[in-house]
Length: 242
Image (cartoon, rainbow, N blue to C red; front, side, top):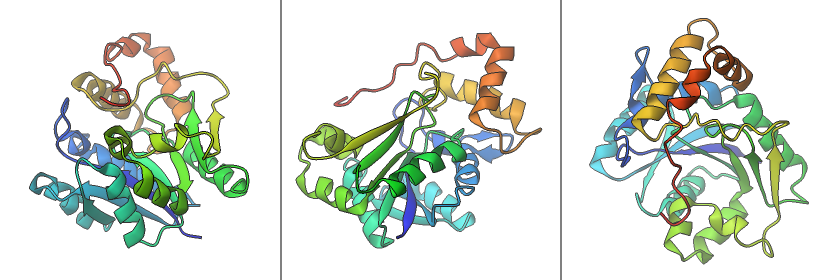
C-alpha cells in the first residue's frame, strides 16, 4: 500500500501572490512545510501538485532543488490535478495537504493517516477537526478520489477536491478526528498578508531554538504573546463555492 502526501501549490494566490515561496529566515514557507512533512514515517512519498502555468515554474524549480516529485495539471480543476498526480505516482492512499500550511504538525498528520489505515473497513475518508487552521489534513483512498474525479460535476467540488465526499454521507463514511480541545479559532494558515505576518513571527521565534516545534509549542507562544491572536483575526476563510 503506497501512502503519498500530495500538496497542491501555485503562485497565483489572489490575496497573497507567491505566498508559498515567500521567505522567513531566508527559507521559503513551502520548504518549512516539506521539512516537517518528511518526518511522517508512514508516508512513502511527497508530491507537489502544481499547475501547467508558466507562473508556476518557480515551484517546479523548487521541487528540483529539494529532489521532490511533482505533477503539473489544471489550475482550476484541482480535483483533476490530484487525480493526475495520484495516477502518475501509483498512489493507493492520498494524504491531502495544502501548501499554505507551513506550521503543519507531522505528529498530528500521522495520527490521521494511522487512523485511516487501521479503520479502512469502517471509513472512506478521515480528516482533522478542531485543530488550529493550518494543521489541516485529509486522508482517503485512490478509489474514492477516482470516483470523485469521475462523478463530481459542480465547479466547487472540482476546485476544492473533497467536498463531494462529505456532501454525500449516504455514499461515503466520514470520520472527523477531533482535537482534545477546540483550537479552531486559531488561524495559522497563510492566505493574506496578515497571516504571513503572524506566521513569520512564530517561525522567527521558535525555529532558531527548536526546528521541529509542534502545535503545543505554538500555543505556548500565544500564551506569552496574546496580542498576536489579533494580527489576522479579521481574515475570513473562503467558503465552499467562493
